[in-house]
Length: 408
Image 1 (tube, rainbow, N blue to C red):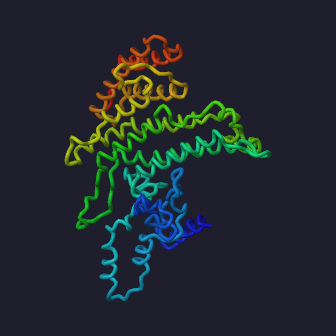
Image 2 (spheres, rainbow, N blue to C red; image 1 turned 90 degrees about the vertical axis):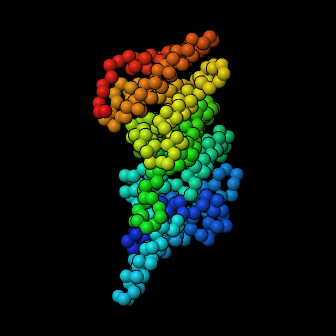
């Protein structure tokens, strides 16, 4: 019933002329969003025109109400501007007075174009609260807990195992949504619709500290060695829904389901974004927009963070590095990283910047040397040795090939 009310308020808002407001999810503090008493009687976003995440608590915490059941301050404000009964004499001054409140935090606005076309870290769908890092950490904890609980999930006679794979797939999908929130913080720029006189700059790069925190969380929670691990015993219980096998050709109908494949798809998308030219260009350009360029997050730091987490089994930061066992899903992720490095070295695009290109070539050479050294260690599993050697050969081949130079 609460969900239906939430949806109905949103759709009635459209009939009254309101557009989506994807900045409204940041109007309420993360503390209040998780307060059961507050959310029972107050809106936990600025507007029902938001696509907010279901308000789920971290495991072991009480949390707020799942769905918003009352209007937010933006809704009252926008409707007042559009529909307040005014005489001809008072209309101009009164509308100007109402509009002058637009810089108030609870009235912030960002719509579809800001979400789909921009790089704004606030104009997002399916986030909640004024602290995107706290929100993402909570969703990662929920997903990890969901994975953990499936290991010991009991079934009554007559039930089937199909719920296991649905739960695991949901956890990975929700982690992907949280990753999207964090990705927009790295290199993000708030784009406010302010006119002169508000006292705020309309273009506001995300400060370096939250960018670094978002990158570290993305890298460690989704690219780290212990991301969403599943025991062999649970894998043997991930049976399909036999009643759906003839009706669909997706995950539900497949005979086997490996969560590591879903995770790999998410990791591929993550590497594509973090190693892409668009983000490198934004990070390089952002140095010119901040007052203290020395503190800015730069591509070199980004690439080093990714390498450390993707190749954590090499012990790159240990005093005496020693290779630890590398499981097959991890080898798949490491090949994805190496393949992207090799591609970026071989075929820079028109968007590529010389500074980023030089960094990538340096990283490829350094990583190839480390992989070659690791492959020579004694007592190494032969499959892992061949994996390390193959990855090193891929990088060496790319570095020695003739590069196609496009652009500057």
